[in-house]
Length: 274
Image 1 (cartoon, one colour):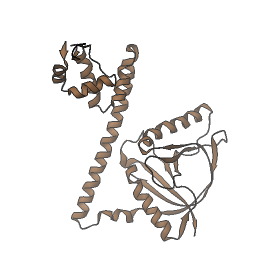
Image 2 (cartoon, one colour):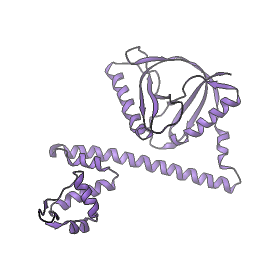
Image 3 (spheres, helix red, strand yellow):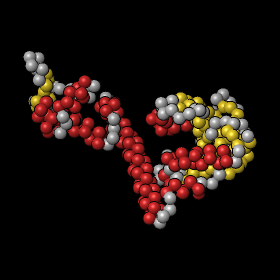
Image 4 (tube, rainbow, N blue to C red):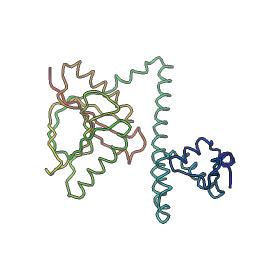
């Protein structure tokens, strides 16, 4: 048996953290002295704590790690394989985003060296005036926090695609999101996830067509705020006003295009003349 101090020293995990792990049921001492409350860990628990440390280094949350540890032995290898692949994809997406940011910073540094204002890129965002046709959309409307949005994006679109497959519906367009919130509140955003389909069934509605200001982003979703700002400026300058919620149409699947620079997104502002 190892004292909590020895166990802590070997695995380089503080005793405070070990006590917290015990509280949440992640790893508990094999024995506790009833008289003085001293905690003791067995040698075999070293492997378990090293496994926990390894998963933490892969950016798994403690809640995720606890779930992994609770898996049945006959299913653990298969589930762990899937979980690691999923986490690897998440990390790769973050690396791609950081690389995109580094490239953008290098471009801005180069612009400053050449005497070009770094915000001049806004002048190169094109805005078109287009007339859209009405479309039938399969949709689900959700209210969520900004932290839940990334997860929700995949979850709710997956559900819509499952319904399309189950009911043998005909796709007529690519996925889209409609933003209904009147203001930005990271704790509560009203979003409609939708996919255009041909058939009128339960869960579909008609999305009106009409006049729109449209812009196309070729790049990371982080740049969408710039597109929105440009569209709003254009709408005001050309003396139009918004009549419905803005929406985005995703021409590329983010789960198939991991390089941010390859993503293509259309942004629409439904408008009318003032």
